[in-house]
Image 1 (tube, rainbow, N blue to C red):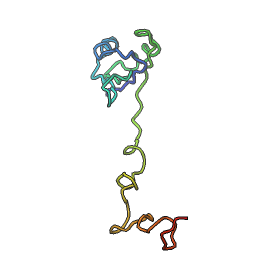
Image 2: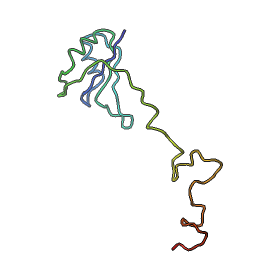
Image 3: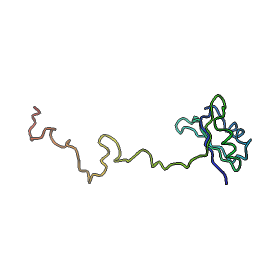
Image 4: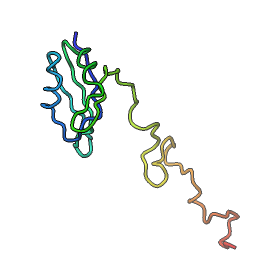
Length: 126
């Protein structure tokens, strides 16, 4: 069974081939996943290496080793945590007054349908 390894504190200029060559000394590398920023596409400085054999030896040998002036952080990858669907509860549709989420049939929940904000039915403000 293959083992997934987290490799952190890589140089931002590191390539998949460099990482693959580093780990192939210890066993067969099945895959290398270089993690990039979703907005910029730039490498984020860590990756995941999947190895069929030799993973424990690679972790032991490479954790703390200096590569491109940076000390690598190498350990067995933990399962990804459930993170939900993107930033907490969503209500309404946005906009000026929250998009009217949960209201019935066009009823207004604000007081803008009155003649002014002071009530009383007359047009005097003061």
